[in-house]
Image (cartoon, rainbow, N blue to C red):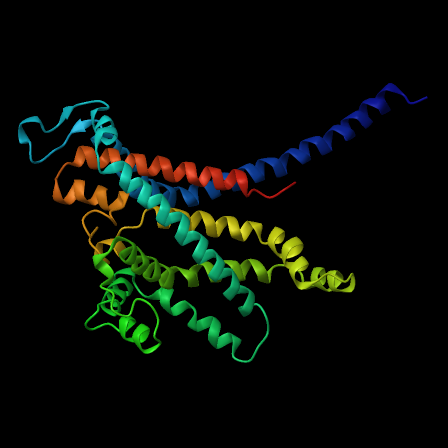
Length: 317
């Protein structure tokens, strides 16, 4: 039988580790506070750069900030600017064109980028040089690449019509910016040339983290190349696909510079996108209230698209 004094001493000894185990928790909490303090300046800077303009734009969307109507500037109008979007005959067609361009460009760029990534993932002579060269179109500023493609699609000075004529292919004498479908074709080519390398690099990074042992085991089991692609590559590539789809969808949905340089929204309004409509409200009509409302709607749609992607392509558990 243990004496009471010994039991109390043992209890005291047993309680000491609990006091000592509290020290690492305090140190861990202190480290977290230090970490928060170190990242706070960066977070504040990001909030100032992104959150403040967004909130200010949201505030503008509820006021009459039409510089062409100085008498009513600054007057609070509530949701009147958003109601104007519903009654604007140009908004819905612009939204449909933007969504159509987004869907077509994403499918084409993802398909081409995946094929190129699969090729670059295999060993061959000069692979390093090709991987470096694939960055060149993506590194060129969008304004520069769009201007180059506008010149190349010019029927007088460009080489596209000349090349099609030499190859006896349709479209050899086409004035590309003059037709709706030809103008969109030129925009898709210019946008794809710029962004396919971006898609390729992201998917190539996803392919390189897939263990080679998985393919070797599948080959031993008699799996064909298509079956390995369907049941191994695509499921394991899902995280990279999600990142690629989110980035490219949002970029395509917000497209402006390529359209502005190559067609300026024409012919007529047939290539006018939502971003182009927003730019027109700000810079041409000087209606910052309506432009702010269009910007807010664009942000909401972009967040909804990202949420759908995140829910659809989230990793299976």
